[in-house]
Structures are given as C-alpha cells and as structure tokens.
Amino acid sequence: MKITANEIAHVATLARLDMDGTVIAKFQHQVGQILDYVKTLDELDTEGVSLTSHATSSTNAFREDRVIPSPGMEQTLLNAPLKEDGYFIVPKVVG
Amino acid sequence: MQPYEMTIHQAAKSLKAREISARELAQSVITRIERVDESIGAYLTVDPEYTLKLAETADEKIGKGEGTPLTGIPLSIKDLISTEGLKTTCASRILEAYVPIYDACVIEKLKQEGAVIAGKVNMDEFAMGSSTENSAFKVTRNPWDLTCIPGGSSGGSAASVAADMCLGSLGSDTGGSIRQPASHCGVVGLKPTYGRVSRYGLVAFASSLDQIGPLTKTVSDAALLMNGISGFDLRDSTASKKERPDFTSFLSKGLGDMTIGIPKEYLETEGIDPDVRAAVMNAISVMKGLGATITDVSLPHSRYAVAAYYVIAPSEASSNLARYDGVKYGFRNDTPASLIDMYRETRSKGFGPEVQRRIIIGTYALSAGYYDAYYGKASKVRTLIMDDFERSFRSCDVILSPVSPIPAFPIGEKIDDPLTMYLLDIFTLSANLAGIPGISVPCGFSRKGLPIGLQLMSRHFEEGKLLKAAYSFEQETDFHLKKPHLPGDES
Image (cartoon, rainbow over all chains, first blue to last red; front, side, top):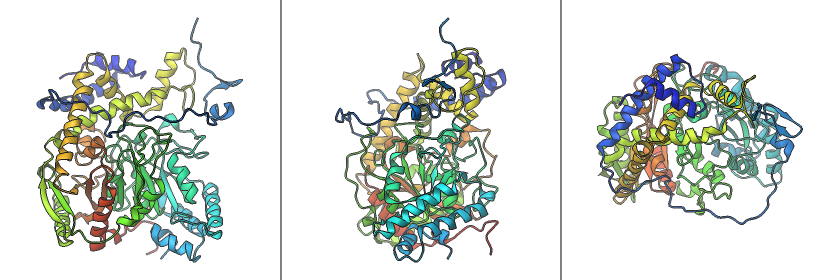
C-alpha cells in the first residue's frame, strides 16, 4: 500500500514532530516500504486467534497501599530546562 | 596477565585473596579505557572520581570480609540504565544533559554487592538499531575490525567487554540488542526471561519486550552477573515473584540429559552467510559430541517475526516516547512561540532520524482506523509465534540457531536502508515477542576474522538450561579465548 505525503505529515502532527518536505518525502518512501513488508502478516489467517500484548502470564500486580518517601521539589526540578519558584516554566497556554 | 584482562570469576578470586585491591583493578580499567577507547569509542561517560569512590567502598567491604563475587568488579553500563548522579543520555540529544536522581533497580543491586561502575557506554539512540550507528554522539567500532559495526543496540557494552575496557557489562535487549552485539564482538550475551530482572530505572523503549541482561567474557561470568541483578522488585509491576536460583549451580559440563531442537525454518532462511552456517553446523556437532540429543523442531511463524515486531515495538515506543516534551527534563528548544510549537521543535531537534521513523510507524499503526489492521494483527501473530515455541519445547529443552544471519558489516553500509537492517533481526526478535530467554555464545570466526555467535533459547525462566548448554559448549571450544588486537596494545 502507498502512504501519502499528507498522511506522513498528519501522523507527524499527531506525534508532535515538525518535518520539512525533504524528510516527509524520505519517510514516505522508507515508511511505505516498511508498511508494505508488514502487510505480509495478512497472509496469515488469524481469525479466532487471541491477542497477546504481554508475554507473561502475570495479571494485575498489587502492592500494599503504603506511603514511601519520594524525591523532594528540588530533586524533582533538578533536570528541568526552565524553572522558577518551584515550578516548571512553559510557554503561555491560555490567552 | 593485566588486571583488566581478567574475567569476573578470576578477579573475584584475586580480590578475595588480596592479590589485588578493587582500587588497583578499577585504575587498571580506567587506564585501559584511556589507552584504547580512542580507537573503539565504546564509552560516552567516564568519571574516574566516581569509579574510584565505588572501588574504595568495595575495598572496605572486602576488608570487613563482606565481599561477594561482584564486589570490586568494574562494569560498563549501557547508557539507558539510570545511574544517580551520572549522566544517562540514551545516546540521544533529547537527554544529552540528563542526570538521573535515582539508580535503576539493577544499579542499586550492583552497588549493594560493591560492584564498580566504570562508566556509561554507547548504544543506538533509545536502543533503536542493530549497529550503534544511531547514536547521536559517536561511532563505536568493532574491536575485531575497526571498519565494522559492533552490533547494536548494546554496541558499547559488547565492544567494551571485547576490548577489555571492563570486566562485564549490562545491556538491554528489546529485539536482540544484547545477543546480536555479543555475537558480533565475540562475547557472551544473555537476554533473561521477561520479568526476571526489574526494569525499574531502565529508560523504556518497548515495555512488553525490554529486558536488562549481562554481556561478559565467559558464560560463568554471565551467571555471576545474573545472580547480582535478578529478582522481584515492587517497582516493576511485571517483575516476576519466582525465586532466583543460584545461576552458577547450572555450570557443569555434559549434555547427556539435554535435547536440542534445530528449527528447520531458521537454517532455510535466505541470506545466511556461509561462514555463519558452517559455524552453526559445527556447533551442532559439538553439542552432539557433548552427549546432547539433536532433534528437528518447527517454528513456522518465525518468518513473520520481523513484520510483527516492527509494528509492536514502534507502537509501544511511540507511546513511551511521548513523555519527551521539553517540560520536566531533557532538551528543550529555545524560544518557542506556543506550547505546541515547543513540543514539536523540541522533539524534532531532540530525536534522531531512526527514532522519528519509529515514532511515525508506531503512531500510524495505533491511529484511528489502522489499529486493528496493524497493532491488532501483529499482536495476534505474536500469539502464533509464542504457540510455535510452546509446541517446540514439548520435544526439546533448548532451541539452537544463529544469532545473526551475517557477521558484523562495514560502518555506513546499511544505514540508509532501514528495512534491510530490520530483516537482520530475524533470529533474535522471536524470543522477545515470546518473552523467553536467549543467550549468545561465541561459536566461530568468519574467513575475515569476525566473530560469530550461537543462539540458544529455552522456556520462560529456564535460563539454567541455557547456561548449562552454553557453558558445556564453551568448555569444549576455544573461541572465547581469542582476543582482538587493538591499536594501543603493546604487542
């Protein structure tokens, strides 16, 4: 199947990636090739086959609801690209 | 023998007998890195002060008689395993300056044992790749041929072990990322069962496939490291509660009670290098000589593993990597006009091409209207691949195959052709999809002198059988004793 430049651009928007025309064209070719290959899965009849999202038999893992120490504010903000007065700073969100 | 040349097993003996101190051993490794890493490029971060401090702690432990086989052992750590106070970049611009505020579970465990961290090693960005060429920071070269890739994504781990720049290493394996570089660099690499080792503090790539494991000079060393890093952890909800065995208890030679399955589909795969085929055929006869019963098994769906994997892994990755938004940590692009622009500019400049490609594939596969056709379909094929193994392990203990269809290839040769590169993962991906363990052990050399690895796989939580088979094979052969000759080596 062919993936269009518009589809790549749309998916890039969904994934919050900024792409110029050259990258879109390159990805259109490469991703198209990969998706074509993935389509070989359609040779298999998977009617009635259950879906595996995890390779272990484990189910929900519960633990005791107990308070444990967590990193303080200073630690949490240590790697922040922009911070002020104990807050992460981001560009203005609402008008 | 120089201290850095020792195996973990040998060094543990020397340390215990006080023939050498942990500090001397660490210094020997630091000097070795200074001398040869310029030509290999395995390390991203070395901090001698940090390393020597850990060595001093180890010496105190040994002094008090509290040493274990890992006390004082210098290890390299793949740069996606969080180390408190030591940069953890995932070989990505987006985490270039990131310094974790906590240790991964495996690092906590190693530190409790008094192991010494020699530094952080190179990898494909976010572990996406099979050649370490996707690192944003540097090229890592294969110690056996500096014009070739070391494999990937744990290429820095494998190269640092092969070049004696550490005594062992921790890597991670999502589709072969421990086994394949181990194979290409002539060292041992073990991907444990999914859930055997806690993923707490491992930067996530594909959460249902990722697993941390050891790369070492010998099979015994892999068992020692497995003892150090395995076990239940509350902070990883997929960590298994199964009791950890003493992995060294499986190290005895002789395979009289073992049946080894040969998947006919694997050896019929097109494009297997004749040298790889010859080495694997030879390995089968060595196993026979050790007393193993050889039987044919069939993994009919294995030819769909690459297609299923390259939907599932990018889907999980696109979701996991959504967290890199330039807000809480990591790189942020300077002067964005709006919040959305900040996300887009940060991510476009922070992620390299392979990571962006996989985010696009994953986002596409999960997007409205395509989910069933891609992710749903691939997840059903995953079930079929698991069923193949389940059926095969009814008639054998261990499955034997090549690790990679070809030996290490020249740097730059395949970087512009992602699909060709993905297809080389054919023999390793299935173990991740099925969650079973796999080991790579040296089994020969190509005519050009490049190492070839043998893969063994077993049922969930049967690493013991892999270790026994790999150990028996290693003791019967001498491939693991050969060392590459490096620029900077005296003789």
